[in-house]
Amino acid sequence: MSRTRTALLAAMALVAGATGTAFAVDPGGAEAAAVPCTVDYKIQNQWSTGFTAAVTVTNNSAAKSSWSLKWSYAGNQKVTSGWNAKLSQSGAAVTAANESYNAQLATGGSVSFGFQGSYSGSNAIPATFTLDGVTCNVDSGGPGGPTDPPDPGGPTDRADNPYAGAKVYVNPEWSEKAAAEPGGSRVSNQPTGVWLDRTAAVNGAGGKMGLRAHLDEALRQKGSGELVVQLVIYNLPGRDCSALASNGELGPTEIDRYKTEYIDPIKTILADSKYSSLRIVTTVEIDSLPNLVTNTGSRPTAVPQCDVMKANGNYVKGVGYALNKLGDVPNVYNYVDAGHHGWIGWDDNFGPTATIMKEAATAEGATVNDVHGFITNTANYSALKEDNFTINDTVAGKSVRESKWLDWNRYVDELSYAQAFRSQLVSSGFNSNIGMLIDTSRNGWGGTARPTGPGATTSVDTYVDGGRYDRRFNGGNWCNQSGAGLGERPQAAPAAGIDAYVWMKPPGESDGASKTIPNDEGKGFDRMCDPTYTGNPRNNHNMSGALPDAPLSGHWFSAQFRQLMQNAYPPLS
Image (cartoon, rainbow, N blue to C red):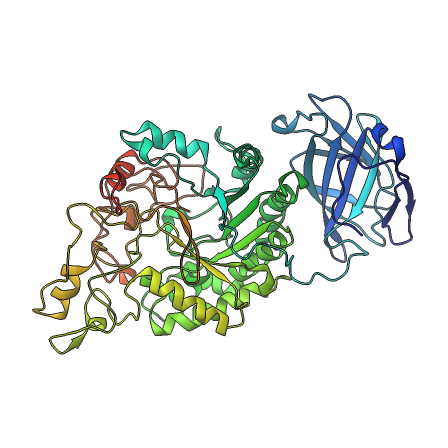
């Protein structure tokens, strides 16, 4: 059965089969113009006692300022929760009414919502839907539908590199803040990622644009060419187990809420045929999988929260579920977060991280075909390319790997790491055509502190420290780093194996508060964001290097943005 239907579907003769699947016959002809509305009802998941469904309503009659869709079940199905509509049920009869943010339904316009339900016995598709009392035509099935063939692991007709030949979406909310800063208009037209960092962000929280609003604006920006929209999927249960500043709203065991209240609604929106012409790039769950390698067990860097997440498996399950569901949408390109060279570059981290990524990519129904690539350095500061020393240099009889800065790491910068890790991932079972993204939003390290040549050869430390662009106290420092600058501007296919340099982290958005700030976003206070903090094993007991007076993560930090522009490399004109 077709997974999509056009908005102007002609009148259909509907026959409900014994399996509950609806079969449609299209008589064509002039009757098509008389169809008042179309309902696309898809069962996304089904198990022995429950299911999730996605519903898209297309209005072919006069524009509406509010709407109400009704149907009745032939069996004992019960709606238990929903999103993007107000759902109620009386006996077998179900009503889905608009929310305030999706009440307008234009002529030819569509609206989508979803829900979870329970059942026993059969789970037949409803035979009739009415929109404001008028009977609609029906389509049904879709991913997980009773007559669908097995999912082969996601569509295979995507562009090899979604960024090639495409514009990239400029977030108007970020652009406005950037342009309001002195000199900010020099970069305010750059594309940045849209962060869906809590459930409320999907529909829009605190007066901000929701996902649909961003996608609608992307269609406006698109014009007649190709356009990429960059989304950050970031709401795992027990999120960021080693970094309190970016903790999230879901507790360690709330994997079901993550699936039904967060991922499923996102998929419903992305799967709307209205957005099928967009190339949608997702960055899937920053920092999660690397934490399971480096911050667990008997390592000195271990933290109890990460041990919990490794034991309950919810990072692996959550990433797998997200890849599976979002990977079903033909125009979605999933890129899994792969840390950065100063985290995963050591021999005992490198291979195990690729292994656990393969585990996640084959969990919860996902396959490696649901992974288009990986992204490194997301929201981090690792220099793209260190020109003044290489991994093969020797000074005073010692390898640069013996310097305090590298501490036996095998990679000196992000580009060499991303290219090497790509090869490791392919060796671990990922497709050979995967591409890498590198976040260059804050790794320029320009300004007056940028070295112009190698350091003194007095010792391996003076050589590396005197020549390195990355001016952090330690590569493990990650919060609002003092001295950082904007990096390479976003561009497609800049190097072998690299799909694009991107600004996935919007410059000027804080990494975390420098002191405790009460909030309703689930975000704690992490001492790594405190300028007075003297460190821990994860940054080799160095000072944090964080800027003072920082707001909560994701909130606008004017002082940081101005510093990033001042220290940009390449410099801003």
